[in-house]
Length: 155
Image (cartoon, rainbow, N blue to C red; front, top):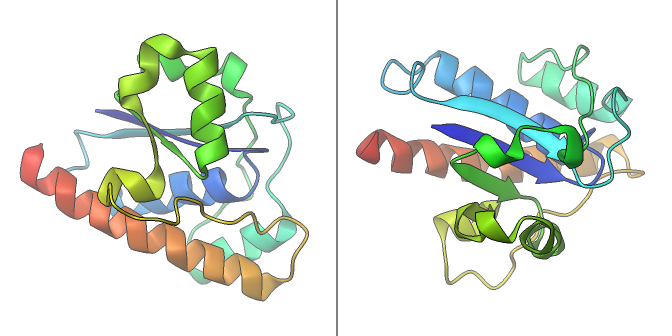
């Protein structure tokens, strides 16, 4: 299964989500050979580094994000994905307009787990302090853990 996380710049949310999921599945004997993980941004500047705060928060998780480079969704492998997980409903709307043929594969991270959730967005930490980044990463990790539980049952 190929999974792609999407946010705006691919330097905070989607980069952290990709890194967290890769780290977790590398230690999961059920999933490690069954899932490939990617990320991209709707307005990403290709090649841009993650923010310093994202790098620092991922270091707290024992994850090195220093080598991450942003990818614009237009230059990504989005059409090869099985599941596309957006940070916000606006990202989902944009992608379904750009790639209508993929609409059945595109979700927000939250709705992929809970279709009835009212708050579909993972808020952008860009420009905020490290505490906001920590909260963002914790929210992403919560949903990734739920995704892993889901995938372990079906893969």
